[in-house]
Image (cartoon, rainbow, N blue to C red; front, side, top):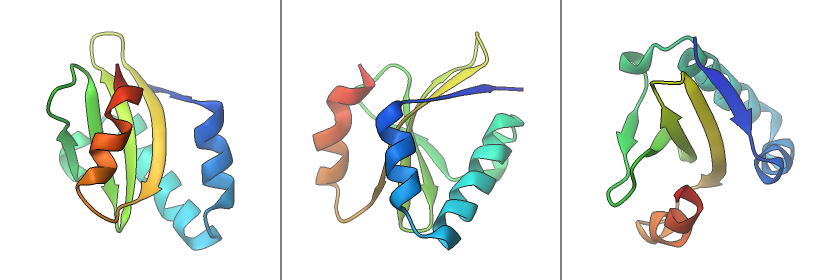
Amino acid sequence: MFHLAFREKTLKILKRVNREQQLKINATLDVLRLEKLSLLDIKKIEGTRYGHRLRVGRWRVLISLFPKTKRVEIIDIFMKTGAENYQKRKHLLK
């Protein structure tokens, strides 16, 4: 089982998301916590060591996945508008 760690900024963003989307994101994070990665739309972000993106509809959850220590850090949550979204946030994953 993975331990999920949220950044303070990420919790604030999640509180501002509408309730329906909050429930979907939380359900997806529960699946991640249970280590069922094959059930998720998750991809590694190029140019990062641990950075991954998790897709929840139009929303993206940036995470740092540390499989050896069974830890996941939730970096950012945003609605995808284009490929430049990842370029803007890549520095958060270092």
